Length: 206
Image 1 (cartoon, one colour):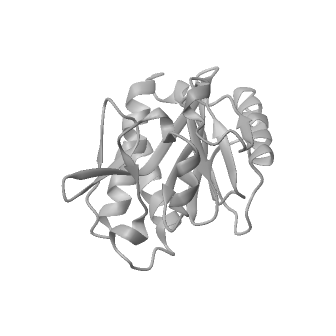
Image 2 (image 1 turned 45 degrees about the horizontal axis):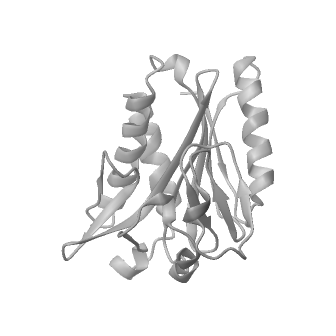
Image 3 (image 1 turned 90 degrees about the horizontal axis):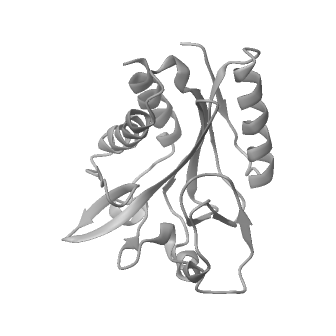
């Protein structure tokens, strides 16, 4: 499968990542470039997707970057793994729903490697963990499709500062907490980006 794998060690500015993805989208559309899977970490930022509303900002002093992905407001920062992609759905029957399910399955499969059982929820997009009957979110998904090319991606909280979520209603979902992998099981997650890429490519080939 002709996909470029990119792994950034240093934190990437959100705007720079967005510019790179949008350029890649144009190049893929013009058959000039390969598809892309890119793992990275962002500097601290709150981003708002196309369906956010002002009442989801609880702390009005935060700076909000309005972006063109689907979804609502989320936080990115240290201790969070981001996986971006630019994937051509014209090669995959133009099936957006199937592609979202593929993303969910890839995250769930990757976390099983660490003996963590998570699940997707049709009503509340993302990846969830059942913590003694208290359902908490560990992974967020936000995708945009243009010219049948899907881009943006998903994030997984490894050791993120959960206090940052107090400033917003994360992903517009009230009454549900956010958690991290380190809170679920305190173990080494250094290889998570490699496992995510492996599972994602495996599921893309199916």
